[in-house]
Amino acid sequence: MVRINRVYTRKGDRGNTSLVGGRSVPKDDPRVESYGTVDELNCVLGIVRCYNGEKPASARRDGFDKILQAIQQRLFDLGSELATLPEDRYEGQVTVGEADVRWLEQVIDTMNAELQPLQSFILPGGGTVSAFLHQARAVCRRAERIAVGLAREQEIGAQVVPYLNRLSDALFVFSRWVAATLGEREVLWEPGVAADDSWKLW
Image (cartoon, rainbow, N blue to C red; front, side):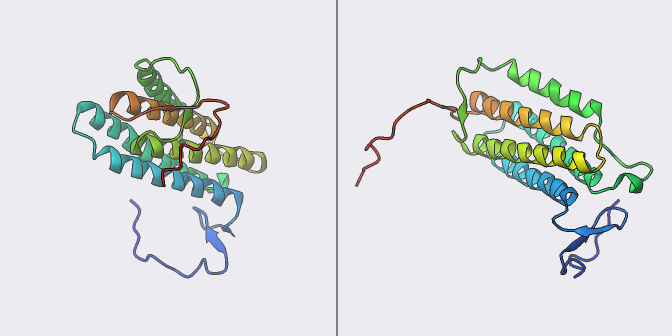
């Protein structure tokens, strides 16, 4: 169990931070950037859950919240894993594994089976939950890119990149599922649509 007694320590005032295990690194180190972006993603998912909770009560809304909560928990585990150098891993440390990737695939397949085939790309928006899911998807893609770059320089867990890759796919499907199931719109991309003067309302 983590115990936090102090919020600030002043140790980071010179631009360094400590990884799990105590190693001091610059705050712009690729490893710090990696788990920091995972934390950002987790924050966006927290917003998604808040707005999802404002939807009319239903088994589907509550089931979706359970999925999001499970992902948030796993992202915290992933952040801890990324914050730990290979030589500092400890007995009992939770890491992302193949079973986590397969779980995401199962969720994706189950939700996607309820959706109509996609005829166009989708514009982010359409509703509050969908919009924040699209933001989460974009942040997840960035987290994946950073993890790929980190893996070229340092050792990371074998399932970190696959998990983030599958999660970004899941978040896209979630946005579509919310539109189809929880009463939000889905705005399709219309290539080449020209701007006109219809915006002139004053």
